[in-house]
Image (cartoon, rainbow, N blue to C red; front, side, top):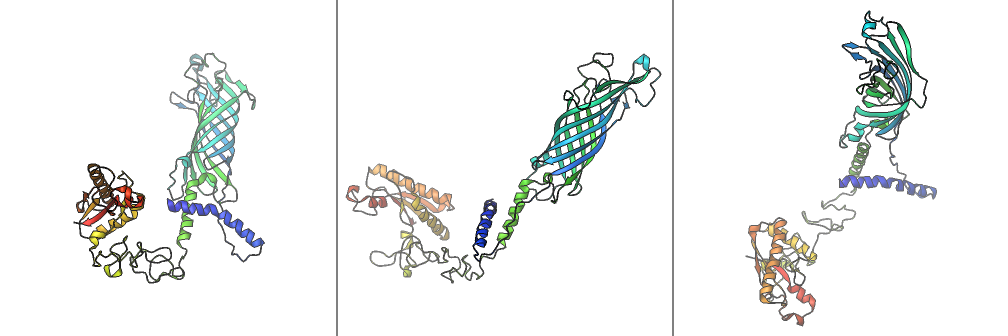
Length: 471
């Protein structure tokens, strides 16, 4: 993730690079012009058309009743504008005819129609509506999907104006029952539903839709006026209908992809991956890296660094205590000592001392505290490396300055040693190789500081310490 954020920040910085190059060109400076990728463009306009079957399910005169299915027809045409990857608008024209009742109006009325009051109805309608289009797939799609997708689920909802003519047929023939003049604003209707799209090509989509059309008019089915024998206005009836259609969408524009077929987050991640690949392919060290220390030879001040040695930014092997023995070979990494003693100090009688008694001294604490000071972390980390590289076991010894009673300082020194032991265990040292010892205020690095008032504070701070010794 950090890598992706880094590359994204590089991408955001590209406009600034282009601006600086333009300045350089206007001032005739010999700077190389770079080509910077721009954000991709997508098509956003399309038109759609299709046809299908409208079915009235809950009206007084229904399309499916008693095993008799009356099939009408519907057609639509729309101009579509995508406002984003997931939302668009459609200006749509609908035209169709519903057929409902006990028989088809194209057929003759049954002989018993008068006795049973069985009638037929059909309604020719026209509608203009503005429909919102939500690309549910782009809202719900996983952003880590790498491949292109060809299926998409869309949700639709909109309002418009409706005009229709409703006819009724009985044993006396067919007659006009209700007419709504074209597109009066008092004849609003709504429709909502869902569609499943398949991408045939970058230009053509095929889509199946199921819409529910709310007519808002109880006389739409041809049942006549309200509260008549046919149009009973039962609470369970409504002149709404379902409209199932199959159609095509033609995508317009000069670009290769329509915006509704592109996942914006996936596109951003793909562009970042492309930039990462380009950065990974850059050859950083044209002059090579002879000692494989990660520093190019052009900048390396030490071209023969021993294998395994840690180096600084100039390729020089680290020597933390600056005693002339690099850390790779230094047996006392944080304590200066001569080369002949592997970087460890000598005893007071100029004899060689065991590194076990001098290794990693000086882990300090605040007054009356067992909290390890942050400046002691490098010593502790070196101790972890040293202990894990050896076969010995060690005692963590805690000490205090001379302030306070013997009992208090004994407990405090043990707590300090215990905290250091826990730090070592938490960072990879086996607990069986470490034990603790508290020496209280009777183990002074500076014995002259008894009482503490006789010494400057830096000496008392040095007395508040933890050190290691081999068992």
